[in-house]
Length: 141
Image (cartoon, rainbow, N blue to C red):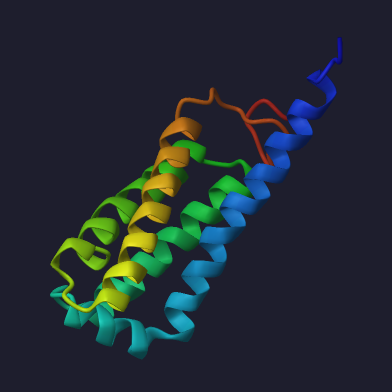
């Protein structure tokens, strides 16, 4: 029988880097493409789209960094969850799209966000502190 125990911590840290890094990168894109994203958000009925894009970008940068470094993970995951729920329902509501290409793109993004939300909910069940945090009240740093 193979003992997978040594790889569990490594898998968790690599997964954390990928998951948290995804949100940091996406948040930076919110600011790099602020006008374009605000225009799209406005077309989907989001009030104050430029402000909404900036705030949501900040939310996922902070959430992604918390996950990436394993710090303030409860707050980081809350930011990610609070981002994903409205964005998924408002920006990727594919069921209202009449154009087949737009509908397909939004359906794919809806399903992706649903999976990302599921991962955030699962991670929120992980007890703190996470393995290899940048800082922890229990660490020697």
